[in-house]
Image (cartoon, rainbow, N blue to C red; front, side):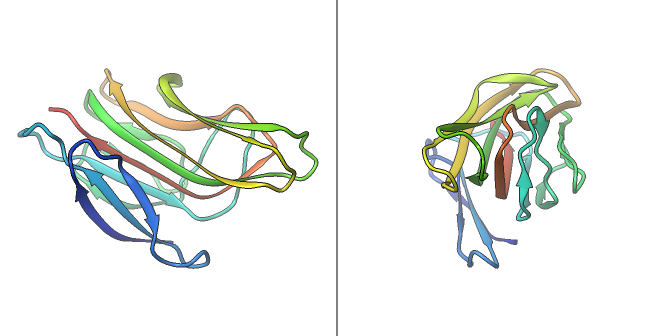
Length: 179
């Protein structure tokens, strides 16, 4: 997996990630919306990916193996870890995407939930869910939300309260959107 292009979209549009490669050799292209308000703060952006397969463990945060894009110094992530440290308070846009499959033996219907947390507290409206109606079913699951960070050194992560699912091609992008 690698990062392809990173371009600026129009104000008010959704952030998005597309795969311009193949399923075996993913090339992720990012489109980040431009702010409608001009500002004079430095840009902060971090993109993280992990193409490997993850088995969802109830109550555990997701791990991201690579951080191929980093702009600015206010966001930090260690490859292979779960948390993103945000050094300055502000408003950040969080975009998450993964491919999910319900594992064999899981009772159907089965719902997978993924929750954005800051300092181990769930973020309002930071929940993505998908209900699987067939064993072996696969689906994309994503969310895009603004997150208010009030503390210096806050830690953001994505956690699932559910078990019985496999996740692949994880991507998480965070960018500062305020001054």
